[in-house]
Amino acid sequence: INYLPAVDLGKRYDFHEYINGQLRFPLAPGRAYKVELYIQQADSVAIDHLQVIYGEKQDIKTLASGNLGICFLYNKPRWLPKDGFQPQVLFKDPIITKKGEWKKISATFVPDRAFLFFVVGNFFKDENTRNTLTNNDEIRAFNETHPGFSEKKKRISYYVIDDFSVTLTEMPTARSVITETLAENSVYIFKNVNFETNKWELLPEALPELKALAAYLLEHPGKQAEIAGHTDNVGNKKDNRVLSEKRAEAVYKYLVFKGMEKGRLSFKGYGEQQPIEPNTTAKGRAANRRVECRLK
Image 1: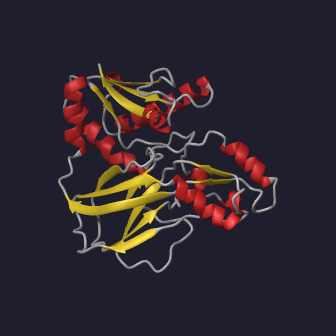
Image 2: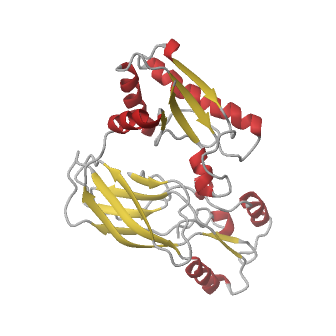
Image 3: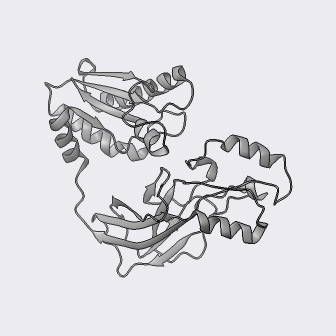
């Protein structure tokens, strides 16, 4: 169970399940590893699971959710906190699969310790977890006014996982990816420049990629660039444009701080005007929430 909010259960904490295990060998600090697994939404299992507890008439809303994380640990986990674990690998966006489909997902990371153990699950609160339901506020309001456990509507995402592997790999540097991308089409979409909802402060995970872009631009003094911010179509158009501009400005200010000349750099927020994917799906909306560097 990757998503089952506390308010749906009449409890203090969200309900999540975790998978933990031990690797064959400790990871080598400083080496790049590819984490790969196959995953499938199991809506029927979720429904059966809750109906056993609450009865066949229970109102159940199945969904896809994000924040599936993999936390690598040095010592064997003896307990799991309700929140606070910081997974080294995180799939923030909802993982959507068709009925019966096994989807392969993967990520690359570099450990800083000789980790031997791992835990898979959602280490974040459900209120901070992206999901595919469009009426969450309505359901939450309903549940807050209905005290009976079985009266409350249940929102749940349930996944099954198979063929989990962690293997050594070569990680392309952010600098090489940026150089190759800008040479091909003059536009680079940041992979790790993400923001908290309705905020524009840069997160620590964004800094390596921004440092790499700053180094690229400083070594190419003849190039000018625009930092462009974009959003999906959720919310007010004017607010989205302002938000996208503040995020683009945050990146702009960091690049100037790293030595870029203001005359070579500009920023602009486009809001929801230039989507690169349809906004009809969670995956499409996630792709449209982005910041780009455009060479002029």
